[in-house]
Image: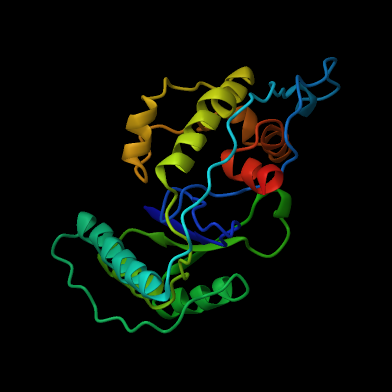
Length: 250
């Protein structure tokens, strides 16, 4: 079973990841920066969530200049090729369809445009919502399935209606800063809340491997934080790198 979501990019820098596909991180909340140890004497489960002291990290590095129109176009074509390689990884005999570029989607129309395309392609639409928006409009839209025809149909939709990339990928200095944040604050903060955090690779290894994620601390399948309020409390106590950059450094 395959489930893929296209989320609204939340950082102008253009390298938030989503998830680990076509971006560095996915923002799930705009949390306030932690300032110290959480108060003791919890009165409910969420008040038992703790933060840790924020380390004195170096200033956030300067990003590379925005992409030119020619570079954005090259990125669009390259992303389509990478997307097709993902289809071939599951179905080596798949035949790539001739897909016309119909225009970039925006934050305002992404959900509507992709929903219409997925439905027209016979895909089962899967909408996603963050814990703060459980009853509101979808924050992301994707498709569920795993057959060859489904993957080709999804490839066609995502290739015809991509998001325009206008910012350069994060440079090595930016990635190094993120690694420091993960190892000096985010990972230890998760660990302080009883979440198992594997040992990280070396800084150079992590930077060189991006956008492959050889290591990234996460809640994983920790059942304590599957509940909505606990998830929100943890993200406030331990903001991920994107959230911290967005709410504090920008």
